[in-house]
Image 1 (cartoon, rainbow, N blue to C red):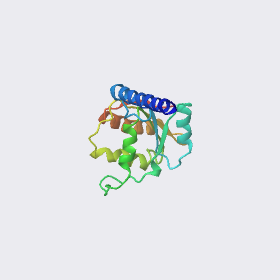
Image 2: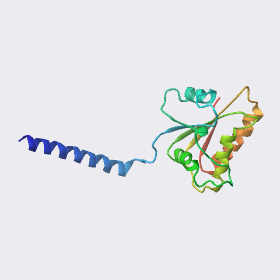
Image 3: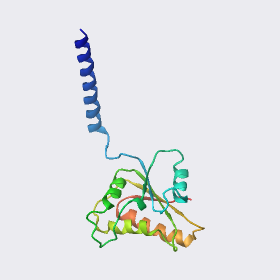
Image 4: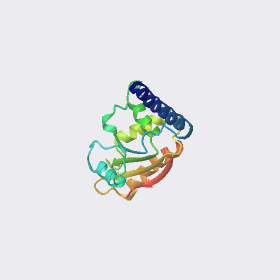
Length: 168
């Protein structure tokens, strides 16, 4: 009798898993593994840029990708074995993307510029992604913010994303 009950319980579990898998296959887009993504273009993993992103998300879950942790080659260098695709796949897996950069020499960091430049050879669209940016530093000027915003607005437009502006 115990064997029959145990077998019946196991059959119920298997059936429940099959139903869940069938529902997921019909209805939900399982490509989205996380809703909120923060791409940190600062050399400091937990510096002011990361702090501002944490304040912006205000307790909402998000994944932080620190560009400093990835080996992304300059456009034109041998990049077959670098980490560009790893970071790109994070964008594909997110719905809302916040890109944060400190201002170095009146512009975005080289880490972010390299990542954007590498998209020159990418045909994929990131349709339906919402993008906001954080620009911070020791008092970035309106001109610096506008220049960085212009580049990211152009990038989002080219890849069919929705540019939502600068987080202030």
